[in-house]
Amino acid sequence: MALGFFSLALFLFLSVDLDSAAASGKEGVVEITYGSAIKLMHEKTKFRLHSHDVPYGSGSGQQSVTGFPGVVDSNSYWIVKPVPGTIAKQGDAILSGATIRLQHMKTRKWLHSHLHASPISGNLEVSCFGDDSNSDTGDHWKLIIEGSGKTWKQDQRVRLQHIDTSGYLHSHDKKYQRIAGGQQEVCGIREKRADNVWLAAEGVYLPVNESSSK
Image 1: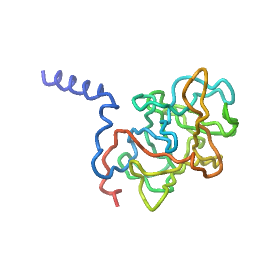
Image 2 (image 1 turned 180 degrees about the horizontal axis):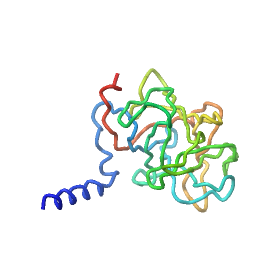
Image 3 (image 1 turned 30 degrees about the vertical axis):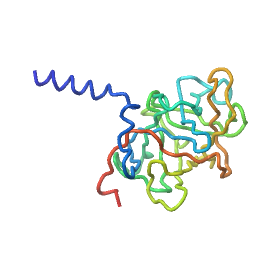
């Protein structure tokens, strides 16, 4: 009987819609930690970084990444992960200058970039690539906090610079017309611009490990 109750409770916990749970942590300062599932909002257009199981029709042919206009869509959740070979662990705070990976929660692929041209503007293509056991340096991004903060916090202005290409994660109001109609292009650009600033918005934020909260 106890086992059955535990199984039911576990099922209900795992079935909770993340968009409903995303309201947690709204009071006070919320730090982003490894293992948190977040939505990244493009500061200028307010679109969310988004992906789905639809390949690009040009360039790499890998899974496409776009900017999505709506707030409530589970395809806009990304899990913040450390790069392999580091001592960072789940619940650790993330310092400015850290190299991180973002794993698309639904498809398990990694936010990725390379030298292929993006479909609309011809800048650096940003895609999703790999899986839980398949990741490379094309999935590595440097976190750059704008301003005086040392650790990444919710609603804080940040840039993500791709390690291999030096391109900043970028979006703009250039929109797709067919496959992802109404969604806007996400690409990489090597220059710092107002269009490559992002904020951690909705999300399920894991509490900070005490040893990493300094």
